[in-house]
Image (cartoon, protein in one colour):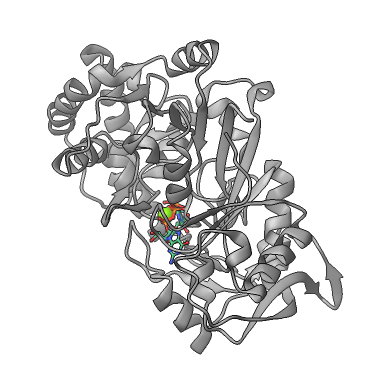
Length: 426
Ligand code: GDP
Ligand code: IMO
Ligand code: MG
């Protein structure tokens, strides 16, 4: 049985990672986020209640501790709002720990996110405009403000002064409103005061937890196809959702990861720009969007919908070393006569089984489909895999066969209870 498990999105995000992490967190002691920020939106349902999380790991309801790892970029205002939101629903948030090495998102990052999109002519990414990319730019240009700096008023003042000056130069050049150092400093110093008690060396805490035999669950945000290295660059996010990033983003060695559960939708969705080879424009696409409630948690945008793409999931299996799949939203396909599954691409007449690296080539890929029989029976109350309709079983087995990953879980509804376990992870 595993002690350390990674939950990773294997498509373009919104695969239901939050639901699966929350489900597994009844067995894990610590749940740790390792990348991204409040561009993520994870919806969780249990006991007839729905929760929407952005920054706080989905283990907050059941785990002993939840950690916001050093690989994250954290908007303090958004984090405090999220804590208050949970508290208002009687969920305690004392178990939160924030890495002192995580980077802070400040108001100029959000404006810069907007400006950078505005400046792009034909390659707008369609970002969530949460300042994610600009915060990672500062991290890699080694001028970012980390949580450890942020909670030290003097360090924060010094670093913020540099940042506001630098960013204002840019805004001035583009005739944008300038930021006032004092305004940001006063407001954000208050946030730092509130968050200070949660900030610590989380890698150190994780090490002690492991020594004490605790079980760890690492929660990815976004999905591997949005990975800055392995996704559909440039239509990606600015971090590495891929499982390998756990080691850097949480401060744990690669030798310590036992299992990687890839979360996948029974079809595909994507928010924002960039090709989606199996995209469905017609009636079936509309049907899936409606039944699957495919509207973004963060921005409310309609998600683009397509058939399941095994080329994509084979790619993510390879780059993330998946040891198991959780196939989610299987119930959404109920009632569709013939279900298509993309098994290869045709690129300029040639059949290929990999994801081309350039968006030009990727956009020219035409899906090669395998058609499977659908099912009509309501599956939302099914508890055991063998009780699913035979066509649903065949569909799940086909995905496992083509992607070469065992299916460990199947999800048949948004609620915690609507989860079928094929293999116990912990
Ligand atoms: P995440 O970002 O990967 O955590 O996924 P989101 O929460 O953004 O999007 C997944 C959506 O699907 C949410 O609205 C979930 O409540 C919902 N969901 C998760 N699993 C299932 C499922 O098996 N069936 C249905 N119908 N909805 C699901
Ligand atoms: P979860 O964790 C779906 C997408 C944006 C955009 C691109 C870059 O809920 O799965 P960014 O703001 O990150 O610079 O935007 O990435 N994106 C997501 N799409 N789910 C997410 O998170 C996403 N986070 C970012 O729509 O196309
Ligand atoms: Mg989401």
